[in-house]
Length: 331
Image (cartoon, rainbow, N blue to C red):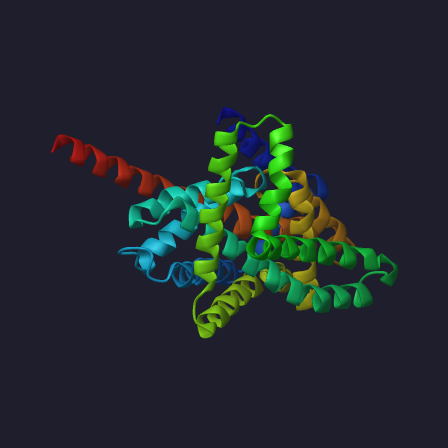
């Protein structure tokens, strides 16, 4: 746990260092040039994104969560996305979701399956958006010889979806393939069987999550699409608020590529890599100082705000749980 806190502090430091090195103190002075109304609009957009994800969560859980209303789903989403941004590679998110959904009698297998379906929906949305957005960005702002920048993420997204399909449809073949390897690594038979049972429960829960009416699946896709369109509009709006201009599609492209680069750092929130990639793509068009200001606003809205608000929700939920346990113990 201590190492995770050090990683989070390192991520926060790197996230602030890149704009400071790029634009110096002028980057922070540039924040005063942005009207407060624009900043409030972007904060409202992030809250709308949380609400969209709360609706997604309720659609995926259907009737399997006892007493889960929109408020409870919203708090759960905020706390889970805080864990997603506060842990390396977002590794803490599924464990946080499992713990929070236990309050609504949701089994760990179901909660994990819901998280997996949520990630699969994100993959599908990006696979749909990436060709159009990236081709536009390459043709208008970048050299078309960089086509591999488009091909690589598309291949990775395709492979990830292929793996999900294999888990859902070739489960028995996967077990037959992996069991001899586990045996060779001297994993005891009891643990191999326990792992197989856990994977089977996960697969059944994932199939059950996807076995909803088609209109609900379309609603799930629509909410996911709206969430990413809103969240990935922050760079465009910030540039507009500074009195400069880049196309909305290019702002979307920059944010998508920057977050992809950030994941490679394996630091919380993709810190360091996201800022460097964003700076490389924006500086030629905005200049160093304006780019640094844009990075500060963008990362606050999509990283620091998630930590602050989500962390508050996580602490409130943990405190409520502790109070309930103490009250139950006194009885």
